[in-house]
Image (cartoon, rainbow, N blue to C red):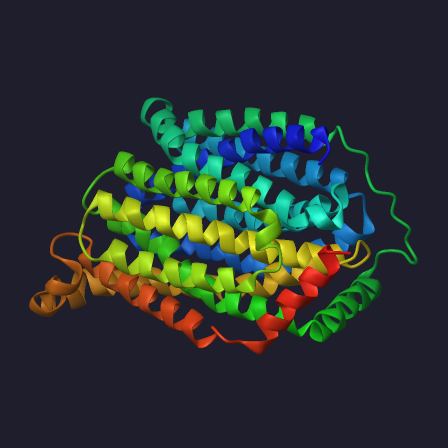
Amino acid sequence: MSKKVYLLWFGQTISWTGSAMSFFAIGVWIFETTGKASALSTVLFVTAIIGVITGPFGGVLADRFPRKRLIITFDLTIASLMCVIGYLALNDILTLPLLIPFALAFGIFEIAHWTTWSAFLGDVVKKHEVTKVSALFESAEAISVLIGPIGGAFIYSFFGLPGVILFDVVTCLIGIATITLFKSRKVELKNKLNIKNIYFDLVEAYNWLKKQKGLLTLVLIFSIGNFLWGFTSVLLPAMILSFTDARGLGIVESSVGIAFLFGSIISLRLSNWLQGNLKVAIYCGLLGGLSLILGSVRPSIILLCIHGVIGGVSGTVQYTVSSGAWLAITTEDIRGRALALRGTIAQMLRPLGVVIAGPLGDYLEFTFYPANTDFLTPIVGSGPGRGYAFLFFLVGVAYVVLWIVNYNNKNLANLSKQVKDITNQ
């Protein structure tokens, strides 16, 4: 790959780490302010649901306008919104209701950013390098997950939420600087952008995806899986902060970052073998479910770190295989919309998991668990947060079942062959 790709990787690693710090700090601020998982689930739900709704339109933009310019525009917009949140927090006027409009905006611009970014990666490398570049930038995300929580917790403890957001804005500018090294792709528009043509663009992408049975099957499985992982994004902070503080949460989330980094290194080293190997993705799904079960059995930072390592490594390898398949099969003219549909379908059930997790977790924690302590203690242990842990356990069991059911899925087997045929040409 080009040396500029590695410089781009460096810039995005810095930028994504700053973003991870600020979102971690916002999550801690919400839980410390309200003391309930349902408050965090509300904000996450708003962000997720608006992203699902607007995601396909981001794909239309990615196929109609220079992708580099779009990424820079989205990054600057998100940074500006963060500055406003920082100002409100600095003046002690930030409240949970005030965060909701920002959550709506983040949902719109974050999903558009990632859709355009995924398509942009397909523009800068050749077909036989798609799995390798997916693994490389998985390592950037891994480093952000590793450093973000610890760094966010450290800055938050000394400078509060405004200090974390200031750091995020500075790192965002560094990331933008590395993107400017690449030339924007020339876009040939057949017609102008209006509601009618947006509709036809989306219909074209939908009809294309319907013919790709392997990709469609894979993304539907991920949709169910992300519904289940939506629960964990709410349950994990609530479960951990019930028996420790933000530093404990930072340690666990950073263990996931270490695992992501290790998984991306494995993916990078074995990229040729992983390319199109959907069986590996299935095995990784089974490991991810088992890690959830393990993390729920006792209120232990060590067990949760082990969960983070197993789940992080398996999830990174799984996502690399999936991303490589999508980048290999899509062509430049359809890639933005196809990847947007991928994101929309894969994430469409996640908001439901997020919004259910808060109230259901609170019910299990404060009502169901105290009334059934004798029955549940052998399964998830005793003490604060064990009602949340029981739901965490059930999610793990469901995730294991999901991948067992699809172990011999014929569409996934055909997808493996299709990807290998394309990348070996």
